[in-house]
Image: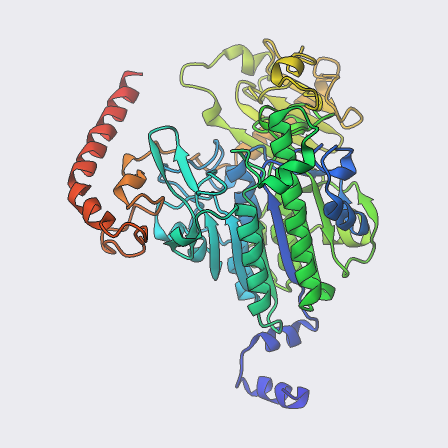
Length: 559
């Protein structure tokens, strides 16, 4: 469209297009590709000295900005929720644990998500990979929370080939969805390979005049540890079996990102794109991951659980080939990416994230000075209150029996049971965990409720809580201030009606579906009698689920 004619039409209010939004902002917003990898440890990338080969990731990070003071949450759902909302867990009610598959819980519907806001800014939004933010109701699904398309899993983990996912041992079902339907026909593909091909399909079919947001949440390298043979053969000399399979999966991620970037280049996206790479939490040492020399791992608030692998690669960076020490948190991507998109957030006062693009791209002072990792009041069981934890250890300011962690300036404070604090050396020797598990064990956790570390000690070997009580008091007061803004934690018990056997063998929304009947649940194509059998046993299954639910409630009352 001719620029003069476009301006005339805009002045008359005759058209309202993406071009209009771009013209008013005075610049073209970039395409954004956000790659999130599941459970990749700090030591599980080549440029951190790993024995795992990641040449593509090393090159992309080396040509961009490595984020070496970058933090996430220690487990899956909390990290993903803060990416999607820009808000701490204490402000979404998701303070405790992950969202389990049978839990009637999901990301609060009244909080806008990153893809919803980006769509308002004129973006096309697509998601490929792991959601893990709840799916109990149809309005919880990715396609109801801002994504125009979705191929991936709804639960937290599953088989990388069959896409069977189990919640405990008693509830298992199929978990691969294309849009809102189960994608039975795609079973048998390796998840990393499948998701990469879908990303390439999206890039080939997209109209580049519309800015694109592509969220690639790979299932790798989460357990079960599975990889194709050609990747496993690269690590035949690695004697530790879990590490060998884990390394092969990481190499698969490296290949995947390489193919995505090649497609960006080939299709003309690259020069106006921003690629962000992030792990969602620390690696799990007992499942092949390695965070050495950081302390702890997945599930803990030690550095090995929350300091992440992350980098930004983009031709649009004002400075490249640098290492950034700016303090950045996963919640910062929400306002940062919206700012890049030209969206001015009307509810920015509710955000915990900061716009850190200036710090990343130009080396400007970072606006973030502290991170509240979490305050989890559910972490302590009822009846475990010890007055000494408040009045002695907590100086009358904070109950140190509550699991919490905060980083402020050069100091990091932890209280309560913050997770396994071992140091796990690289798992390269043969024989498995029995040979390396006892090499370095924690010596400062027994009977402890408060720890204080300085950033001059990034490996958290020197606890300064007793030596610097004045710092402890300041940070305890900050925890108390944050806690006054917290919403009540939402932690409902599992619902037996979520069992896939009640829904054609598929993990799918189970609340609010009465009006929809069987719509949205496709039957397995090679079993035409499945639907009939499902209906014939439905009443028995629901009765069994009811008895199970009553039994669970009685058990909770007894305990």
